[in-house]
Amino acid sequence: MARKAKIAIKTKETDIKIELTIDGRGVNVITTPNPFFSHMLSNFSKHGLFDLKLSAKGDVDVDYHHTIEDVGLRLGSAFKKALGSASGIRRCAGASMPMMDSLATVTVDVSNRPYFRFNTTKESDGLNKKSVFSDRKARVFDMGLLKEFLKAFSNAAGVDLHVSILYGDDIHHAIEAVFKSLGRALSSAVEKDARIKGALSTKGRL
Image (cartoon, rainbow, N blue to C red; front, side, top):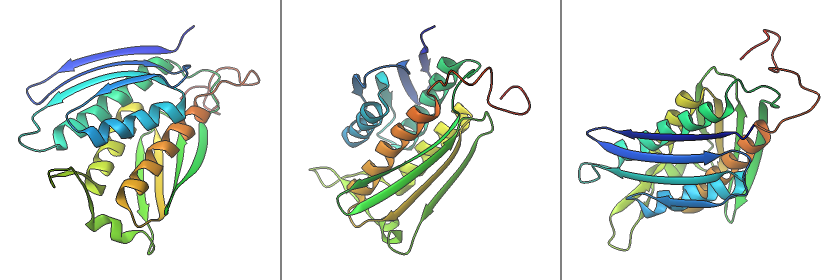
């Protein structure tokens, strides 16, 4: 059976629609009020080989926080819905991705036990004080928003998610390395293995 999901949720803060196909080719059509975030989601889709159609609107006149967090929640929910019982999947995987001056690593366990850990090192800690800016010199993305998205995704998808930025100078490069690594790690974790019958767990279910 095709592993697909549709999510459409509208609140007073956001309006988000998602169509996800896990076993795809990385085809994506993404529209959000934050062009940088849209670009990152496109990288996630392309490197994870997930087909993703996503549109998001939000109260960005207040802040980007609500929109970024809610996209994480809805995308995580879509993954959980598409996986169903998660029967036959490898479950655990990791990926590392360089992006010019930056290197990120992401490890996931699709365990139905959400946990999120984010780590920077001495060689990447300075990124916490930087932001991605638009042509109008407005702040459009930073490490705080990255963490909000990842935490929301982890909680909604039921994924044990560990992210480390080992080093980096350019915040754009570092965040892009994270999104690409996340796509690749998830793609490997949700891949089916014919040797696995049911859930890969001593409990018999996730």
